[in-house]
Length: 244
Ligand SMILES: Nc1ncnc2c1ncn2[C@@H]1O[C@H](COP(=O)(O)OP(=O)(O)O)[C@@H](O)[C@H]1O
Ligand SMILES: CC(C)(COP(=O)(O)O)[C@@H](O)C(=O)NCCC(=O)O
Ligand SMILES: [K+]
Image (cartoon, rainbow, N blue to C red; front, side, top):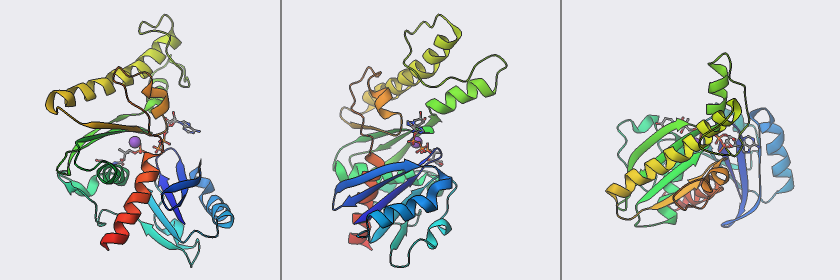
């Protein structure tokens, strides 16, 4: 059994895989890492391998004391990935974006792929059908936008995400919800339309903590694939085993 762990900037997500199937999954905060790991490993003593992708401020050392009999695979830029990296600064590319791209290549061979991950930040990644990773974009995620509006102004309240009632918000709260949520939907549709001008065919994978909330607001019909990063970690693990 494999335990896959995705350490983002907001929270830690995990999934336990038996072959390709997720048999358990959940999330926890950074402060609960040690306790949560112990609990998961106790519940699933069949786990032999641990694969970790971290862009949050949790390093490999946090896992070293976990369990001697467990094989730890902490993904780094030096691992082999199933795409040719065209990023001008490959060593600054987020490990999560690399894992998502690897998952997209392995799961959808010979396609152009756009991967959108709406977490703390929204990331856009494009891998073409010849498996060249071209890059993408980074913008603030939903929570970050709500918090920034509150943090950097005197009069804007801190709201939690909510479906805007209209494009034309008729109160401060509705204007904020429209600006944040409609703003992100317009942004995503704008990126997608821009790729449509350049590529006649590509698949879109929408994932991350806000994927389901956003998918239904897009003009383009896209299904949220919420576990895509965790599934990509399992695929990356199998790819590593074959290629190491
Ligand atoms: N239980 C939750 N805790 C925190 N964020 C959540 C939760 N459920 C949904 N979200 C949303 O998910 C987003 C974070 O997504 P996630 O993919 O977990 O981020 P990251 O990978 O950057 O840690 C937040 O913007 C928030 O709106
Ligand atoms: C852009 C990110 C902060 C996204 O992190 P997340 O929203 O998943 O927590 C992360 O991928 C990262 O730190 N990237 C490094 C810069 C880059 O990818 O070019
Ligand atoms: K992200």
